[in-house]
Image 1 (cartoon, rainbow, N blue to C red):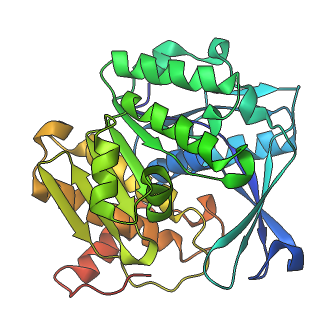
Image 2 (cartoon, rainbow, N blue to C red):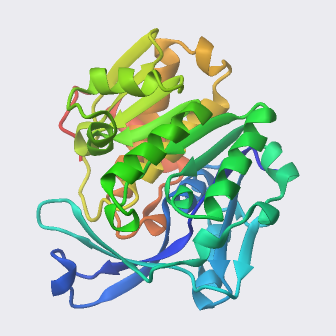
Length: 329
């Protein structure tokens, strides 16, 4: 049984072969994707014992995703198939301003059909860490399945991790997304948000005030990422800190946040203390590793194909040990 279980969407990223708007893309290359699947793959590449729970179509894309996860040492025993919908496609392009242009193909994907009866509750309860995202909380039956899985993991004593991962085209409105995400926070111990997601959820640009707002909803640990500028973490009212990013040659930033989450969860898994007992030193070590994993992912194209192994992360950390902070990737 796995030490870490992630649950959510596994889909195909169709990555533009050129920078710019999707409307100007000359062609696309397929890559395995979906934020929770990326996190699982990231953990597998880092050497964790990890499994993935989700649903894909009974189609060539589903076969490709299962194989891609297995290639990253992810257990796929809890990845189920359906013939009712196709595996979802997400067309992605890196814009000239550094952001991403997303287009999700189809109104409904196989990932949204994950149901409570698809869950292997013993498998989920085996995990010390359980991670999920917001995409499977948008529609039923995946919403109920996601909440049930989180409940099972929590009852078994797991650390529950959540990534809101806001994708506007998939929601009816920003208000709906915000309300649903805030309603999810009392279920979790750890939440990772980008600075943009933090502002959307808390209506403030101030990371400290925003983090206080999220902590008030229930989580113990909030991590806020700022892309190339690194991250800030808040462990209740006990510890907070900021760590700079790493300077690397950037090819594509898709998946960097997911690699960061993978690094963070590995650190939480391997820490000898519970969340409530972690020291500032523990947290600095965890989030420096997470920053390095995220940065290295920017050096390749596509999310899962670019995820680093543990040796790569540790090599980057050793090269920069004691170096002055820089502006990151």
